Amino acid sequence: MDKNIFNISSDNDFTKVALDVFKHQFENNKTYRSFCDLLYIHPSDIHKIEEIPFLPIQFFKSRKVLSSLDKVQEIFTSSGTTGSITSQHFVTDIKLYQESYLKGFAHFYGDIKDYVVLALLPNYLEREGSSLVFMVDDLIQKSNHIDSGFYLHNLEELAQKIITLEKKGQKILLIGVTFALLDLIEKHQFLLKNTIIMETGGMKGKRKELVREELHLLLKNGFGVAEIHSEYGMTELLSQAYSKGNGIFKTPPWMKILIRDTEDALTILPNQKTGGINVIDLANYNSCSFIATQDLGKIHQNSTFEIIGRFDNSDIRGCNLMVL
Image 1 (tube, rainbow, N blue to C red):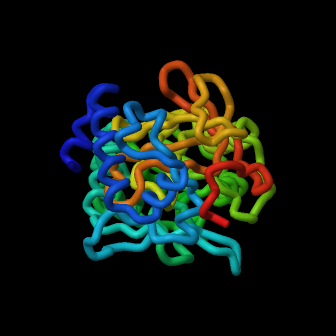
Image 2: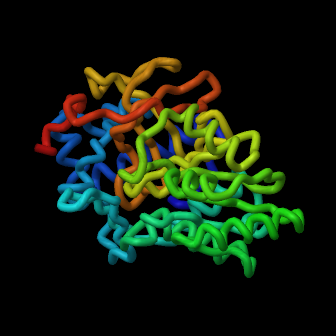
């Protein structure tokens, strides 16, 4: 099945594989099966992806969401405030995750070996179980470059490294959590020509939240770049979408975004309407590929999408029959 997932080249291919994955997960994932049964939905009723039920993401906090009996190789956990319940993503085939992010990165950015990868992810490094750290660590290894590496709070060293590599004309990927990138440009002003600045979102309580336009303007001015790139992924997924500017994201061929009505979770909205983001991630074959997130967004005509914000807990309605 994983061969089919990464060979998708058309909407018809995607629909065919997605319906096969849905049937597999309905039959093999107890949590997802219970959810579908509560909605009286069976694979024989489903003929297009818009009809597939999307599992609320909160289930990863309360249930084991697995479609495989294989041994669990990794458990990825979400970051949470002290005392809060975190999501757990049980991964039985770590190679599937690696294939997904490596092929996804190559799809948008080319060969990882062309880049020095500099990672500024302090809060992620300071805890166990981050799927983002796992991915970035592997990208650092695969870049096969002596200058690639993680930075925690050593911003001075990082700034000098960027300046030195820029002078050599070396392509750089600087991937960082938002508050740490802001910390860096408060200490140093750059004028970068060969560096991609990729923010992974999140102030994590370290700074005041900013709207995207305001944040990206600060980062563009501080780094001296024309665009700020972004990565959209989460603990519960095995694939990422990427934005090369203006907060407009694209998915790799095995991932798709649908927008659901915030009042009726089973209704899928047309393009340009704002609603809850549903993700189909076919690489998540051994878990659940159909997830209703707590993000709000909208899809544009060419299948690109943007994130508008997040639900607050009072906004989450419908389809949460088993969560409570």
